[in-house]
Image 1 (tube, rainbow, N blue to C red):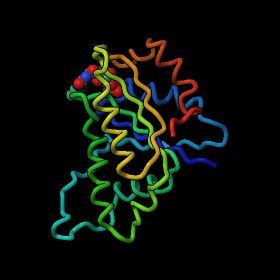
Image 2 (image 1 turned 120 degrees about the horizontal axis):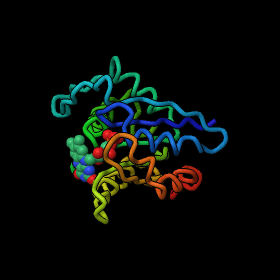
Image 3 (image 1 turned 120 degrees about the vertical axis):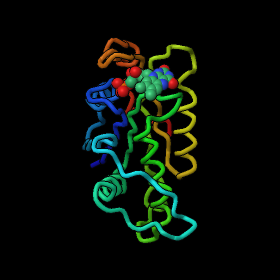
Length: 183
Ligand SMILES: Cc1cc2nc3c(=O)[nH]c(=O)nc-3n(C[C@H](O)[C@H](O)[C@H](O)COP(=O)(O)O)c2cc1C
């Protein structure tokens, strides 16, 4: 059984990035089990950098739920709108918390994350060629730095909620997306 953890990052309900992630999730490889953890609602607690004071403790509450789901996952799928050429805030907040979790020895976060696979699904409004590239680059570098494999990036176009479902190219790619990981 492969555990797929979908991490929607949009700050609005039923947005495009969630719709595209659902379209891809409909074609999970056999033996996959999907779990969804909304990073935006309810909001994650704000990260604070306590590394210099050794103040990072094991996560509690919603963060503990997220950490448990993350550590249990084989495949991590970040589904985010493009915000200012990058990841939407809730997704960024999660990555910031990863930095805290790396400081908590009993979590064995770095060792447990190594070898898992990270995927990116994004939707943006700007059709300019390459405008999704900075976000994809961040995710590829994040994967490499964390010792994760990068599964691939699926990008769609849309602005009003649901508009991405008219992006025929993205929907066609969604079908085989998870079946053909890059790494
Ligand atoms: C704060 C904010 C920043 C945005 N920045 C970008 C951007 O840099 N490039 C882009 O193409 N679209 C940008 N957009 C448009 C969204 O990416 C687009 O509406 C997308 O479909 C939203 O996805 P969602 O429905 O999953 O939230 C931005 C939207 C918001 C609200």
